[in-house]
Structures are given as structure tokens and as C-alpha cells.
Length: 508
Image 1 (cartoon, helix red, strand yellow):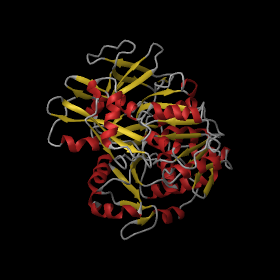
Image 2 (spheres, rainbow, N blue to C red):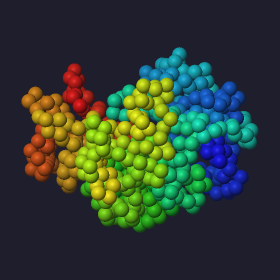
Image 3 (spheres, rainbow, N blue to C red):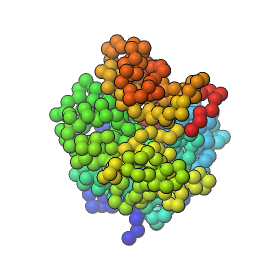
Image 4 (cartoon, rainbow, N blue to C red):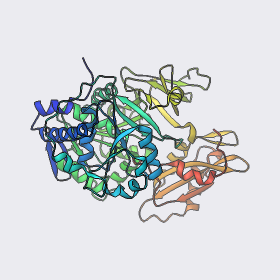
């Protein structure tokens, strides 16, 4: 059996031609119609000389054009390189060069950036939403192509994509996933979240980050319906779930918080949901409890690395093990390791390491970094956690986020759980800043609920009265309108922490 995905959309176009494949705004495409779009895009790429193993970078917001390219590129045997349209010139140029992209498809809003770095880009740069001087019109070029296509002869080992991630270091690394790896996403995620051909998955965040593939891949594998929103908007998402009878959603914690606080939130409008998946960062217990109370028997939590290891807290364990992020999936394994490489006892904190069938092929052209992350076949996460006596994983924090105050280890998540209980706090992020005496001290950044009147000083005192130890007390509370976030919606503590550490070295 050949495990590759070059023929997947074509397969459904033949055997499920009239089933709805994609919904985007007012457009509804059957599998036959979606395959025709994929085929035209694939023929355009081939006409540009793009073939087996060539890299194609997309720099697009959520759109039908981006979604069709996600399938057209691997269908012709090329390698998908999704990049964020939030990138600035030097960063974009670096990633395009670093991926060896032979073609870039972007959008008109990126023209100032693209013009600035034109000399660093390949010859073929197309605009998905209309032509401009020196740049071809992708839509018009696709429209001129035939809507039939013979997929490339791919193998399981061929590259499907390169996903760039900065992790906690800020240094971009191109994570390579093969057709086999992405096929395993289809099997593993589909089974874990109980997906079928009748499933309707909605995605409201940017699909340029790897978390989107968690529900996208099994939806298309099963021939289900994929509802893509242009961007996350909590009230609009609620109405779309009700209208489309959505069964599966994937959200980062900030989106879950926004959904629960939306003015039109109601359990009745979300009654069709079978799976509410939280990933990307730990969801604090305060919000987890509220979600499980309002929408019971639907909550899943995924802890994972794009490099290729995950655990999942199943909905059947969501209340009984609500502080946990679950267990490894079949054909996967996990270890919690001490600094000396020996395995920790239950409830002893160590580094989370794992191996699984979704493990990356490595970092693109960075064998040195690959060797640091994958050792003896095990992915080393850099995250700290422990397992209980039943083998369920509990996250403590990222090693790089841990605060060392006078030799005492402070895990930000412990303080965040306390701060999140304050009725005026909507979101919280705790990080370490320099302290002349203790080395580091914790600071809490918060986003307050609308209409909240609590002062930063009063909130600081409230938190400090409730933390478990004196050394966990925060030195300051910063009230912010919003946090810096990645394209995936993750809170970027690094950016909040950096001004404090300018010119100083944070010890780990």
C-alpha cells in the first residue's frame, strides 16, 4: 500500500462528487468542483516548470486560493511552504530563500513588502487577487487551465510540506513532513476525534500554522466538509456553527475565551458540536471548567509539537482528568526525562520526550538542529511535565519560560491559574523579568474583562495573597489591551519579556 496524498482530492471527486467539500463565505464547492480548482492550479504550476520536489511558497490569508494550493502543490509532487502574510520584508525574504522556493503565490496587500525584497524572490511571483505591475494574475492564469490533471507519482517518503516555526528561540526552522507523515495525521487525528464522512469541521484561525492540519487532514481524508472562515471572529463563528451544523472545531485558548464571552454565545447554537479541541497552549482550569459545564462531553485537549509528538485528552476523560493533557496515541510512546537522561518516576517533573508516526523528517537543511531535537529516535520537546500513576501527562511549563528566583523554580502556569480566577481577568500571561537580588521575579500581564475597574496594584495584591508560596508573588501587574500573538493566535511571552532583558542574558 502506497501512503501518499497526491490523489486524495481526485479520489473524492470521483466517488463523492456531489458531497460538499469546502465552504468559504458565500461559496460552497462540491468535491467535483473543488477538484476542478485544484486541477487548474496544478496545471498552472506545471506550466511554470514546477515539478517533483520543487518548493512553492504561499503568502496568503485564508482564502479558496490558499486552500486549493494546499492540495494542488502536493498533487503535482511539489512541496508546500506556507508562510504568514504578517511577515515583514527581511523575514519573508529569509524564509523564501531558506526554503529554495521556485514560485511564490501571494496577495496584493503584500505588494509593498514584495516590492522591497523582489531581488530575493524567485522569477515566478503570482498575486491571488489580481495582477499588478510585474506580477502575474493567479486567478486569471488558473482560469485558462484545463480542469483535469494526472497526479504525480509520489511515494510515502516524498516531502509534502515544509512548515516554518520559530519556537521559543525566534530562529526559524523548516519542519519537513512527508506524504507518510501527513497521511498519519489523517488516520491518527481522524480516529482520535471520531471523524467520519459526515463530519463538518470549521476552522476560523489562519491555516498557515500546523495546528490547522490537525482537523483539515482527516476531514479531507474522510470526504467530509471543511468550513473555512476568513479570520477568527467569535460572534460570526457561533452563527456559522449553528448554520452549518458544524461537528468539529479546533481553537487556541484565546479563541475559546473569546467564544465563551461572545454576546451571542449560547449552548443551543453550538449544540451540533461533537468535538471542541483546544491546542497551542494550556487552557487554564477556570476556562476549562466553564466550557465543560456549558458544553459537556465535547472537550478535547491536545498537547503537541509540529516536530511530531502529541498527547490527547479525550472527551471521556475531560472532567476526571481535567488538569491533564491526556496520553500518547497508539503507536506512540512518551518518556519524562531528568537532565541526566534517566526516566522520572510518576509525578516527578522532567522534560517531555516522545516518538510517534507523525514525527518530522527533520529540519530542512539543518541536520545540526535536527540532531539536537531528535535523539535516538525521540523528539525532545523542551517542555516540562510529569505523568500520574495512570500515565496521563500534566504540563508544568516550557523550560525556557521557567523563572529562577533566588534558586527557586517558578512555573508561570501555576501563577496564571491563580490570576485567572479573579472575576475581572479575561487573560493572563506570567513571565520572568530581571531582579538585582533574586535574579528573576515574576510579572503578570493581564487583559481585563470589559467594564472591569480593578487597578493593577489591587490585582497584584489579590494574586499575591493566593499564590502557593512567597517566591511566586508577582512584582508587577501590567494591564494590556491585547497580547502580542503569532499568526496561530498563540500568546508571545517572548515579545513581552524582551524589553526587560535587553542587554542582559536570561539564564536557563
